[in-house]
Length: 232
Image (cartoon, rainbow, N blue to C red; front, top):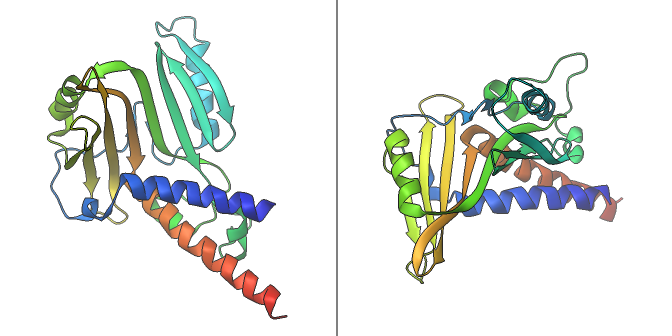
């Protein structure tokens, strides 16, 4: 049962990431900014640290913001309502099965994922994505605001209906190793035959690569275990 759960966990992230970020995003490009996190949260922050941050903000009597934690799944997701807008913080940790090929070193803290996370076993969920959901807003207004901050999107796609689709900003410094920054995806949908947006997703570039590598290692272990069980 544990193996099936881990397998579904990896599949879910791989399909989601590959759908959002096909190969063309990895060409070298100059961008005016990098996306190193979202609002007060940086990529790679733990579930507990972000949860504590929002609890502190929500209970601060001097705060002018209205913040609520609506739902939480430890080391996986944290749903926040902040001033009427929903923010889904998504976290990633290494599947248990990979302990066999990538054990955590005893007595040593987890490495900073921005430095050497590719070779570490991450027991604590770390932030790799934030999804923002709000009332419908004309897509052009959303794009205008993002273009003032980040410049033109790297890629845009339009559906057969000429309305739906997505615009993708690649805000990554790939001259650094590992790459620093992330992606922003503005989703379009039709409303009264015009493009509107109700959702934006932000992703870490480095952690996206880590998840893709974990996926490959995970299924390599699965195959090895299967062969071992078939041929004792």
